[in-house]
Each structure stands twice: as structure tokens, then as C-alpha cells.
Image (cartoon, rainbow, N blue to C red; front, side, top):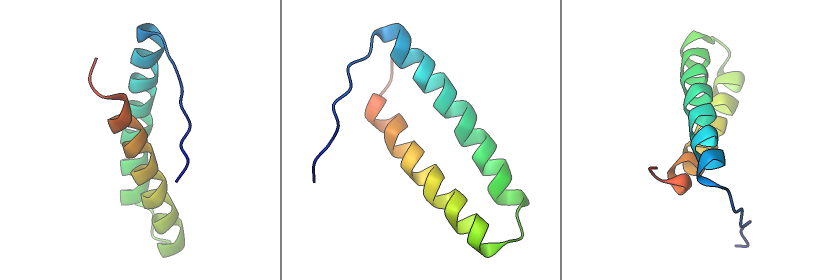
Length: 60
């Protein structure tokens, strides 16, 4: 599987971590609030992908 390599400054990586944490929190609330199974599945998949991105950034 081919990957994409992205070089970020520490400030850029820190901001991306902050944005991802905020979006992941919002997604968790949306997942809990939705009654539509299809929408819930899409949100869960999106959260999983963004969690992978956050994990690849690691800790500061």
C-alpha cells in the first residue's frame, strides 16, 4: 500500500494534533446523537481514519 509522506514543522504538527483532537471529540458526540445507522457507520469510519492520522503524528 502506497503512503503519503508529509513534512510538518513542530508548530504545524501541534496545530494539526489540536484540530484532530477537537474534530474527534465532535465526531464522538455526533455518533452518540445520531439515530440513522448509515450515518452512524460513516461517522465511525471517519473517526477511525482520523484516529489513525492522529496516532501517526505521535506525541509532541
